[in-house]
Length: 297
Image (tube, rainbow, N blue to C red; front, side, top):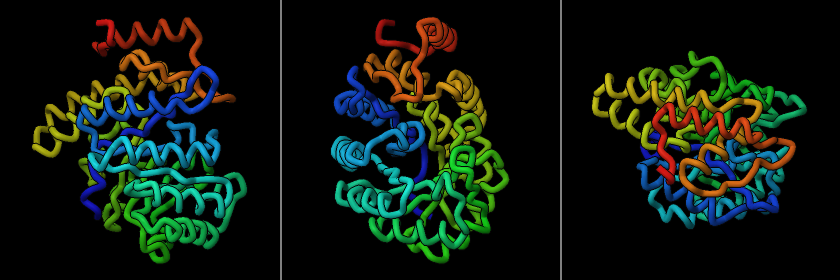
């Protein structure tokens, strides 16, 4: 396993300006808030970052910003997934040139592919960057489950493979991936601590970017053997994560972070929708009930 890819890796949102374009300043501010809170890295331009809604040029610019802003203080894992292998490979090549520490990619989606095609897709993309490579296991969106059997095929042909973000619903595979000597990062922050206890290397999810200090405390407490404290922080983190309603995931992530950090992160890119005024008021109420501070407090 690669020891540098462990801990809390918030899945970064992609802030937008009022005209719907990438808000570079807000992205840098969100990163800096999280870095100062002690996170270990970022999952950049992934699902929480509206990846499939981004233009390739935006993906390339985000990779440059992430590398420049972090200045080696944390590890950036850049998502380069796209509908075609050639597009993903070009994004991977650019990501490497931009200075990110690793890349990640979803399997081919929409049209179901054979295992051999999936392996070749990953082999081509990983070799284009020649950086540590993470598989993005997100069957709820891609309709492709990367099982341990498929992962072994990938491992046999992709020497850059170091781990995965396991966002599939079946947690039992975590232990199997760990036994394959892979960095298995759990993609559900509500069960970060249980995953750590069966060998996961850390957590990658949107909610850790909302309250990074809570999830960093889960990690630090677990590493120190203070399971009681880790459980207390896990409960707090799970309550915050529960505020993110799936059908408006991007809207809730952006609204929470905007209110919490005092940074205008804009609205999600269509077809995703932002929160209604009623939903935003209710979110603020729940944030207050959970003791989540905002700049005005």
